[in-house]
Amino acid sequence: MSEPIIEVLDLQKRYGNVDAVNGISFSIYHGEIFGLLGPNGAGKTTTLEIIETLKEKTSGAVKVYGYNIDRDAAAIKQIIGVQLQSSGYYPGLNLEQLLELFAGLYNTQINPLQILSLVNLADKAKAKVKELSGGQRQRFSIATTLVNNPKVIFLDEPTTGLDPQARRSLWELIRTIRASVTTIVLTTHYMDEAEYLCDRIAIMDQGRLIALDSPDALIDQLLQGGFERKKDVKAATLEDVFIALTGHSLEPAL
Image (cartoon, rainbow, N blue to C red; front, side, top):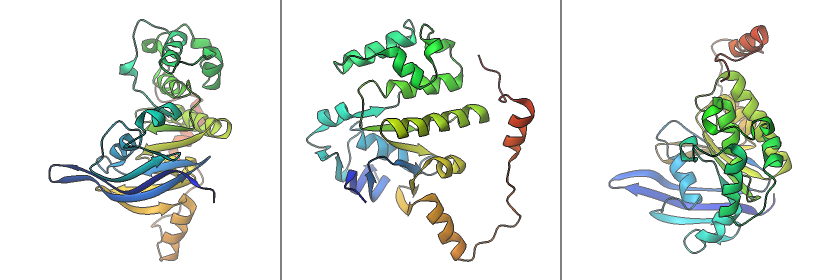
C-alpha cells in the first residue's frame, strides 16, 4: 500500500469531562473512499472538522499530505475541499455565480459549467440554490468542493434527508468523482451507504475507534465468529421495489 495522505495519531477532543474523540488513530490512502461510520454523537463529525482545521484538537497529531495541522493549517486548506451546507450560500446568486465566488476565494480560475456538468447540474446554472430539489442541493454542495482542484474532499453525511432515488444518484456521483478527481473522506450513519461506497471504513462509537477495515473484511470477520441472520437476506429491498414500480422517488422533485 502507498504512503498515507492523511495520518491521525492518538487524536483526542475533550469538552469539559466529555471525550468527544478519545485517542483514535488511522491512516487514509490516495484514491480511497474512506468512511467514518457511527451513530449520532459518535465523534465522526468532530474528527472530520479537526482534520479540516476547522476545530482545535485537545491532543494527538494529524497530518494531511505531510502538512501538520498545528503549523500548516493555511496550506492544508488550499488542498482540501469541504462540503458546505445550503444555508451558507448567498441567496441572491445563481449556481454559476456562486462557483465563481468560491473560486475567487482560492484565487483560481474555473469553468463553472464544466464543474456543474460533472454533478449533472449544467441546466441549472442560472438557478438559485433555493430553487433546487434536495438532491440537487446536495450535488451542488459537492460541486463547491471541486473549485480548487482539491487532493481530498470531505463530505459530512452527504445523503441525510434525501429520498431513496436521490441517495442512489448521489452515491454514483461520489464514485464518479473519486474515479476522475480525488480521494474522498465521508461520514455516514447509513450502513448500506458505507458498504456500497467505501473502500475502507472506521467504525466509531462514543468517541472511540472500534473497527477499521474494508466492509467485506468486517463482514467476513463477523461470519467467521459464528454470526447467523435470523432470516434470509433477499436480493432486493422494498426500496428497490418502489423505484422499479414507480420510476420515481418518494418525494416529487421541486
